[in-house]
Amino acid sequence: MSRPDARYLEMQREAVSDGWPGDGDEAVTTLRTTVSWESPRTLISRNQSPDLPFEQTINPYRGCEHGCVYCYARPTHAYLDLSPGLDFESRLFAKADAAAVLRRELSAPGYRPTPIMLGANTDAYQPIERDLRITRDILAVLSATRHPVSIVTKSALVERDIDLLRPLADVDAVQVFISITTLDTTLARRLEPRAASPRRRLATLRALAAAGVRCGVMIAPIIPALNDSELEAILQAVAETGSQHAGYVMVRLPREVNPLFQAWLAQHYPLKASHVLSLIRDLRGGRLNDAEFGTRMSGTGVFAQIIKARFQKACARLGLGRSTHALSTGHFRPPPRDGAQMTLF
Image (cartoon, rainbow, N blue to C red; front, side, top):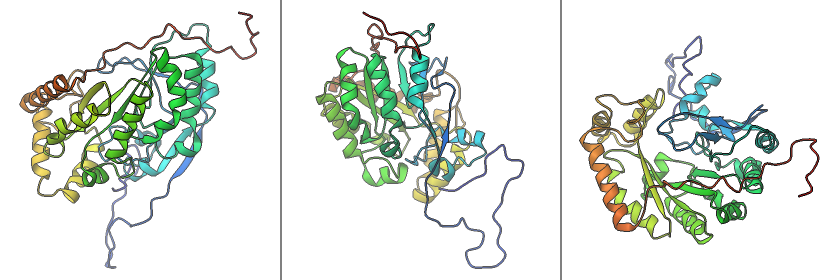
């Protein structure tokens, strides 16, 4: 992974050689993670995208240590004048006092509960969460108030919080999706260098299902000629864990993700690179990215239709379904407002 400049910088850097051996190449250094603290005034973000089955999201972190080359959130680091490449993976931002801010928002007189997606942009269970525990603090508030929540993660760390998920499961107010891109450990290590192994993610699904937590798989992204051949095998492995649901997303290459992904392809799969990119263009109307609502998640054309048909056929055979279930909001009880008198009943 390289460190391209953020697109809003006034000046751009360019590596040049002055004759010394290795000059002009990207410096090889040990990647060190730094965390900066933010003090947000609000924690819940809202969206009106017709492609997303939720209106509210919480992202405890900006940037993500998992280092997934295809991550559609990488371009957001440009707003901080940081590189969507290595900076996105190593210069992270954490939200201080997140639980207190969330309690304040949930206790507001006009608040009306709708399911919250936890970690829609960057993974809420990325490695720094093991020490910082911001996601757990947020989930503790949601669990105590019985607020409905959906989680998507590729981390096994979500198992740590089963004690908080189980009370939500009892009132039908939680679902967890584990993202699985491939069962091939070599490909997984190259695509997602600091995420849990595919086998460990399957074990996490098994643990969630055993605990009575509604769960499933998100096969994301499907990359033509790279992991699409594994579609049925992934669904078969997921069905064997006791999971109930499945979904998928086609690869997206917005803004800086495009050149980063192409460079990654040239490094790891040079003989496949042109074929992969050609199929992506077929999915995206001749382009490498399509930002249009309605098609950006699934793609268009023959290849997209084949993937859809294969997915539906495999899910029908294995008893997996799309998650169209509406989480319950009827058990929500807002936390007491700061300084408010406690109620007797």
